[in-house]
Image 1: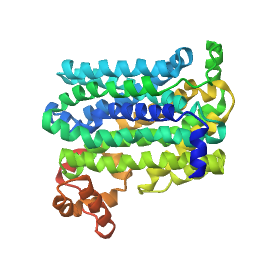
Image 2: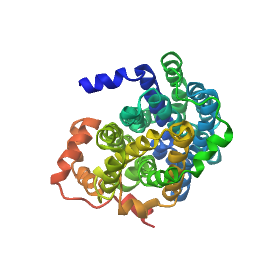
Image 3: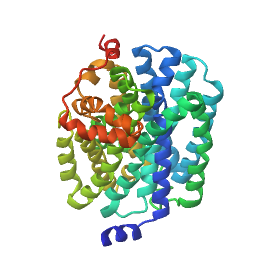
Length: 402
């Protein structure tokens, strides 16, 4: 505990919290279509290919937008860039609420949702910029835990969509965007590590750094796999196993929450035992087959990789530009694979959940019913899954198997 107090004293805690809150809200927006996909696909009668395209566009768009947002942050400051992005998110939610009426409109909305996905590089740099190298990993892990927004989206969006209509959820999110704006405006303070005199050549010099490309490749497997799978899980659970739309969101929440928790642990371990050693260990952990732990190791590996990258004193590596590159290209490449996977890859493996465990949890659904279909009920069902034989997929799975 004394060590954690020392960590807090070494930086700027309000900025750390503001960066975390901003990232968490951005993740809620980024995966919103995935959380509401069962409602959307039912209304528009989407095919498997149309679902894959709709859900992958926000991830690819977010990957592409991270680089220009990182450059903007270098020139105008990370706090200002954050406010610009939150304003764009508000306009995006307004578009979704007022102007989405056809599948083509949905694709446009999916593209605009990429704005929220661009937040990662700026948020990580904003929150960790106040902390010395020996605490970088923990700071980035705490900010990165904002990917708990994927769990919040999966938990809150389906019941709201069921009660008020899926399009109304965009309106609620647009109003809610005023909260992170206020948090960033009044709590965040621009870190002192920005090189205001660096030119475009210095910023682009990071493209020549081999470490950046290596970490980008690692990010394809770690965070890219995580966000792609979590985005597709509600559709997967609903179509494969016949659970309700709300239950599909609750199951996804349990898987997504794991990725947020282990980010903090990954950052702390990398500070304590070294970035290179921790990264090698976590990469090995991602090879664990068919276990929920696979997603946890993947998230921890991402935290360790970013900590090692930011430790370097080269300005472009520790700034938003390199963060955007490492995370952006990784997500882009991984999400392209997700778009074309459909049932085959989902039936083979899942980094975020163990298929066998959740099939067993399906057998325990009676216990969840007694708990009122609540997250606690599903947690209880998954706990008994370790003792229950796996079931066959629901008949609805036949459509995905083709």
